[in-house]
Length: 164
Image (cartoon, rainbow, N blue to C red; front, side, top):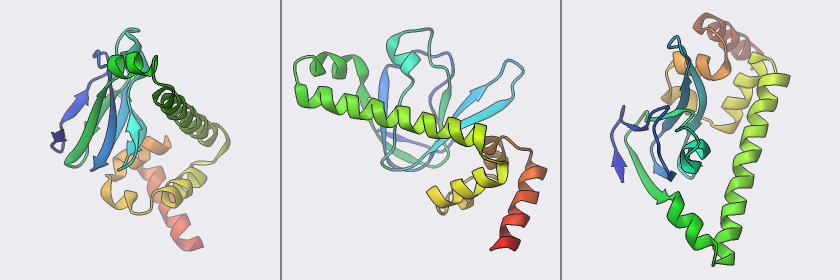
């Protein structure tokens, strides 16, 4: 499936029972607070997979929104079909376990970064993990991902450049 820049795969609150494999492009997963403030959960690059567990399990709809920041090529896998088939296919069941473990590890790492690293360390980690991403994403989005203001991000970038 192909999606254009700015096109949502789903919005917070929607029911979406799909797992998406990003083959090409760049996506953003984000939360919106009741007052409209955006919090960025993650950026997704080719090879990444994502889906809303709440949306897949029918537990009140997706807890976040997913939008294309660039044109994207995706493979869409229906969770219900995947789950039903995995009940009779050990290899597929093991693949699902591997996916869920990778998902849990990613969440644990993100939680650690937010709770234990400074904003400057989070910025450096982002640069190290995804070189070139900062050139493809707006400064406002990077700031929201790091949990800082755009002014704070400017200061962080200057300190990182001076240290390099």
